[in-house]
Length: 247
Image (cartoon, rainbow, N blue to C red; front, side, top):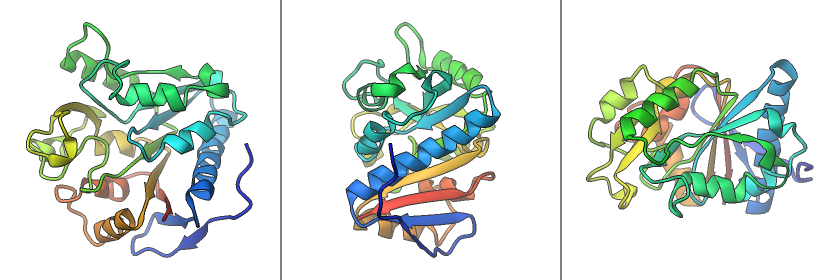
C-alpha cells in the first residue's frame, strides 16, 4: 500500500498538541489515513514484540480499514481491539466487531489477533473486567471517531454517569446512554475512558464533512468534555492528536 501522491495540507489549530491534516477528497483522505496508521504500527513493531491497535466503529472509518487491511505489515504480531462496543454479540450486524471483521480483518490483516469486547454467556461487568485486563497491554494507537453530537467512543454529551466515566481510573467502563439521541436504540455500551486513552503511544481522529469540521473546531475552544466528549481526544494527558479530515 502506497501513500497517495497528493499529500495533506497541515492547517493551524488553536490547541497545542493537535495537528489537522486536510485532504481534498475521500480517496486521498482514506489512503493517507491508512498509510499513517500502518506507519505507526510498523514503527512500534520495530521496537516491540507486538503492537496493539484500538479501533472505532461507525461508517466513517470503513474505507480506511479496507485499505489498511492490505498494508504490508507483520499482522500476526498485531492485536486489534475495540474502542467501544454496543451491548450486542460480536456477530450482530449492528456491532462494531462485525464492522471490523468485514472491513479490516481481511486480506493481509486477517492474520491479526482480534479481541472483542462482548462474548456469548458473559455479563457486561465481566466483559468490562476482561477488557481492563487486556488493556494492561499498552496501546500503540487509539483510533477515534466523532458523532454529529460531539460524542466519541460511547461517551455521549450529558450522558448519565458521564462525569464518573470521564474520571474513572479504569481503561474501560460500562455506560448507560439512556436519553442520548445519538446513541440510537443501543443504550447499554462499553467504552474506553480518558484514562485508557492516555496510556496510548499515539492517537488519531478520523472525521469527514464540513459539519464535523465545524463541530471539532468548536470543541477546540473549550475543555469541558461533558458538553462535547470528543474533547478527551486532546485534553486527556499523553500523546498528541492527529486529526485527518476531508470534505
